[in-house]
Length: 260
Image (cartoon, rainbow, N blue to C red; front, side, top):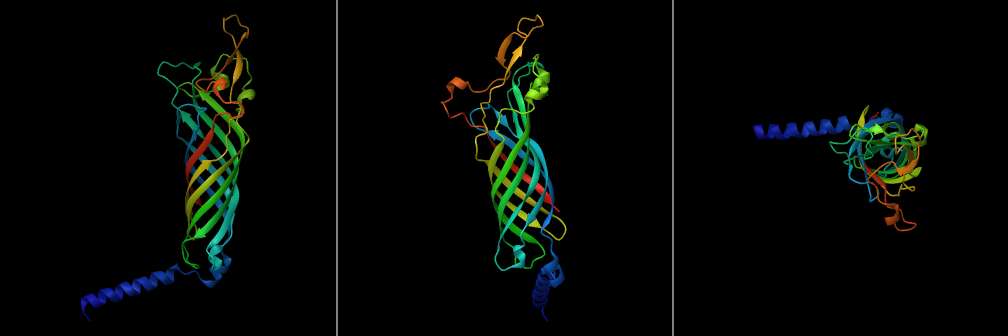
């Protein structure tokens, strides 16, 4: 047999062996689990006209998921849902080198949310492949149960960074709406024991819930709170907003997660 024939035969055998190795046994095929854990991180930021100079920040997530097993049927379509605990938000390029700890320029917002993704899966791999590859798209419901604003170049929490008479508890929930809805588009790979997902998410709702933080400050240094001012800047002047149409505060993220 000529060398080129040997080469072609080896290619065919390797291909056949790889195809056989990718096939799931009948027992494994029927016993595949449809739930698991996921954890990862994301590049997050905000958009819209209300908050000025947003910049990306890193957030973390962990959650549980459950999905149908489209690899067990001929149709490539399936679904996935679950519940996630997620930290997102944005940095802001509002600080200057001359800022002090009591400067009112905000430099970061953190949002803690409990999220429920509602996704449709489209399988790209064959029906009984060990490695499952699929596109994902859908919506994600978010409950923003906590949010914190930081000011100055040192990114200190607002209530401890200014000489105000507001309890810190008054500002552990910023005037943003409790619920958000995000569009999701992504790709997921699941191996026998480990996988990953990459997704892009875009907030569809305006989170601006009259985003103005007013507080009393000691303007003349006599130890008495005597001046009501807006504690942070720069935000849009509420008088410049159209009545009934507050300027946009939206969120976006690019997320990578390991799937177990």
